[in-house]
Length: 398
View (cartoon, rainbow, N blue to C red):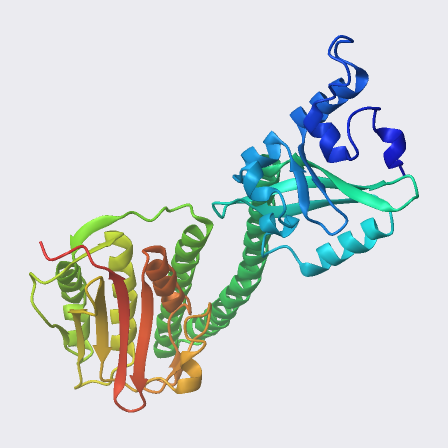
């Protein structure tokens, strides 16, 4: 541990802070001496400060003032906590004081706060300076500004964490997807074997039923694979979200028109409510069209013949517009509303007693809504139906 009387040159004052201020001018005639050179090097590379034994600042160099945003006059006499960042744990400072009060050197990477509130990071070394009797005279702090490096490291860590999370989701997705595909494939193999037996025994009716079921399972697998690829592209960022201004009612009208014939065949009229010239939204038009397609398709599946599905647009606030799909179907139980947007969650359709669809449709709706800066909301009542809403940023009425 350096001793105060040993480290200072003669004639420079009674403290380290005074020597630093003196710029090592022990003798101008003698030229630049070793201590002057040392001071210049320290000052140019570091944020330097000196405090008394109680922690009040007695010296702050230009680098410290420049980085922190405080003038020397604002710092002198104040504790070092003036630049303390609230995110730095209190036990860091407890360890600091415990170490330097025991006359040991303390080192750490600290996040500090500038006068304007911005953060900066410094590699810190605090050295206790002892007087001739071995007591603590003051503390000298040397700090190296590593803000740029720390920000780069944090961005790298965030990138690695995101990549690790994407890899985890990918593995999870492939595992679940392979299970979901295995079920219809097993069914197809079973019906294919039955169809062979039916042809061999001359039973065309059974063969026909088997062929119909194989066709249905093939359609299910096709839907599942399509939804899997779409969700994968959305979650991986392969398909960036566009920001387009478009008429919300026109996209609703388009989707409703696409389902008119399907709804009619199932005895479930699909109706467009509201004014075609209503509100504009700012979102990815094609992705919103797909999300509405999923919602209307689900509504038809869960609505009994003789009832209806309605879709339209309504204003939620000055800045938010809702594109909704309302059905008069079976409704969704409260406990199911918590999980219905998760991957591969399929509710049993009480009308058919079967699980229909890929189990990804509503997950895709949620990802699309969020990717467009919006949300998806659900209101439902058992026996009365459900209303799904995609709430998007408004782009005005013109």
